[in-house]
Amino acid sequence: MTKPNPFEVVQRQLDKCAKIIKLEPGVLAILRTPMRELHVSFPVRLDDGSVKVFQGFRVQYNDARGPAKGGIRFHPDETIDTVRALAAWMTWKCALLDLPLGGGKGGVVCNPKQMSEGELERLSRAYIREIYQFVGPTRDVPAPDVYTNPKIMAWMMDEYSKITGQHQRGVITGKPVCIGGSHGRADATARGGMFTIREATKELGIDLSKATVAIQGYGNAGFYAACLIETLFGSKVLAVSDSRGGVYNKDGILPQAVCDYKVTTSSVINYPGSKPISNEKLLELDVDILIPAALENVITKNNAPKIKAKIVAELANGPTTPEADEILYQKGIHVIPDFLCNAGGVTVSYFEMVQNFYMYSWDEDMVYERLDKKMTSAYHAVLETARKLNINMRQAAYVVAVERVVEAMKLRGWI
Ligand code: NAD
Image (cartoon, rainbow, N blue to C red):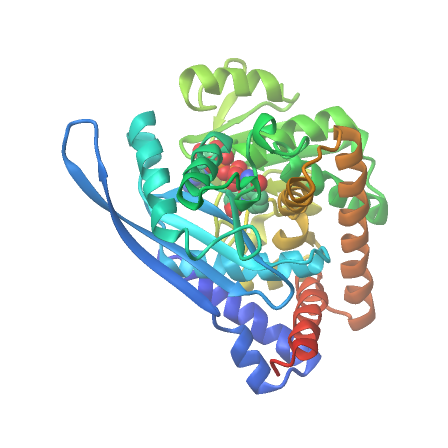
């Protein structure tokens, strides 16, 4: 079955929002297209002495509210349309969290799992050499995303600093703390999601200490979500998965132990004391909270009728197709939409930019407190709008975010 093009999904979501807020056609046309995009091809020498050409992208979707902000993915299936979609979601996400930032995204078509550390470093530095004129601390600030991490951010910051002849910590976020990263960045996406889940359960009358959870994806977002939902709220994680499959235990799994196991075996599958479960079946488990934390388009019109969770907390970007969204809404499932649920990462990235600009470091408690405030206030802005206009949470998130972007474009005199 062919998966929907994520950029077409973005445009359809935006079109729905435009109808609700009666957006002028010309303004909608601006928002349906990225403002700028850069396509690059660059050579990297591999360990066997051969040279391979890689393709990369950087998209600045809309920067009316401030410098573009968004991660860099290293993925074999990366396409320009995925990067455009993710850059659009970053635009709405930054606006929804009321950050003074626009939306951007980058990616390189590569398979990091088949590359040595040396090859990855050469690729990361080469990509930055190609895009350095396009990015910068006051222009466009990348961050980690799928299959990129703080070490890669450090190489990229170092390469950019060398090219420009200045220490440029603020060019990229998600760095290791000792070279300008923020405390609390590592688990920020999941922690931010936890604050929205907490607010949603208050609303739905779910006792989090008795709640059951299934999580698809066990990388940065999924792993920390599993740990935090257990340690902060006492909820029980029944199933987790990664690209190779999943594991299930009706009495709960131990998130940290599964992570330790994955470090040694490179997957969660066959974790002792658990039963295997496919990624598809995991989504259909009878749990209170389902957290998709891997890739796009995993909840579709085919499996949406079988979803039993009361809350779908979208830590992944774009896990639910528009058709599936409608089905979940009709079933009364409370969806915390991606660009609200996973906004903790960019929020702490923004805190990292602020700390880099004034060369100071906040402690963890300060980061958590400010993150909680931002996420809680964004959640309630969305909930209130959903109630007021009688629309679902995703449409409400679009309404809040798009109205803010449009206001910025108007005030700047673009429209
Ligand atoms: P990651 O690379 O750390 O982890 C991705 C995980 O997904 C891995 O466990 C991988 O095995 C798993 N996976 C890959 N393909 C899969 C498949 N077909 N089925 C099931 N699992 C699969 O990436 P991440 O940073 O955790 O990002 C995950 C999602 O969260 C992405 O959609 C990303 O855009 C989103 N997100 C991440 C951040 C962040 O700060 N890391 C912020 C916002 C949104």
